[in-house]
Length: 500
Image (tube, rainbow, N blue to C red; front, side, top):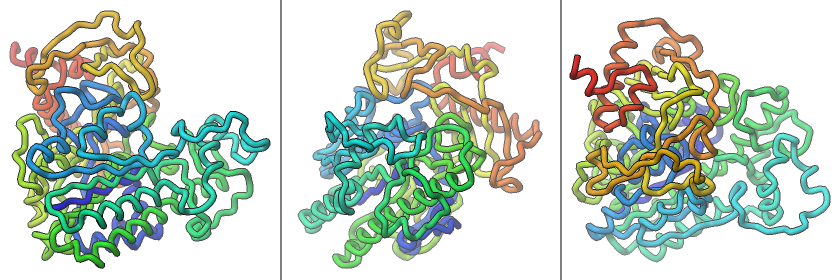
């Protein structure tokens, strides 16, 4: 068996035609007509690298760790596939793999290729940028200096790293389409901001905006003019359509070489993105509304080609990808995995879990059962009892500071560690970049997605709330959440409940 796994970053599910959106995305719909589309697929740990750690390990990590690398005790699907004779290859322009907090992911693969220069990847160098460079950009983007420099080297569509990623994918397929037992991960940073696309895609989404370049929203509340809001949304739509167009080239390749007969194809994202909904941009500081937490997933497998165009309502999560990949390639699923293989669901809809939790280190712990979503915040967000559990003390950009080791101990509290001990380090009140984010709208709320799919009106339903709390505690217990993860939410630990 062979697998092509495609990740687009920050993909808003509701922007896709196959999920009811209006943006020009015929090739996502084309794949949906070939494969099985999952309608109730949720994130787990957020944002970027915590989500990728889930993809590798099939385990939630946001209750134990902030943004960080794969740990020595983590069981990666890429390594498990290699152990069982499947060659694994990574192609990506996701520049976080080059940072301290992501430096151990790519090396789990048999081989890897990186396209540099996305966003503010410190790649292109201009000691003296050209006069007037910054004036071409909206004031919102003035702090994105490296991103401006990188753009100085993009002169045509072929210079876009998205294009380079797909070109490398076709090169891999050309060289290996006659071989068996391989896994290719094609991971594209787009449509993550900046929403920069060639004119042939931008022209599809005209706006009334007439000003400097505006395609990189800050992670904040919406306070832009209607014209600015429309411009940002139009630029996201243009970049999304560009992603769709290149996905179409991949589908054309499958058609031309009849890869459908022996190659599975999985397309998803790490998280969604708010485009002004709930008066927010982006994905980190606000509650994880449906636009962020409920994400697209389309799966094609040759053995289930007769299920073409079908949809599944079962509640699934990012943690299910890892065991699915192992199952596709005939590998045993390790005991540490919390996710469930989705292969049986390709044959027919069936329940695999009653509920799933998701969140970000230091923020709310959230839960959904597919009908309701419940955001549970600590009562005191400023004075939380937070601890990191790690053998790799790095943040998104940088190493842990000396003060972060004050009070650190070496512990071995979780069975998923195997024989490894870990450092237990206090996270502190002021979370550093990559560890957490300043959280706003930190209010515990319950939504009924059936009557209020846009999550505009929280409900008061004590019976449902108590049921979801019980489900949350049970999942936390299975995940081996540390004691402070219960206490910060106002719950008794399992040990305390047993003593009662």
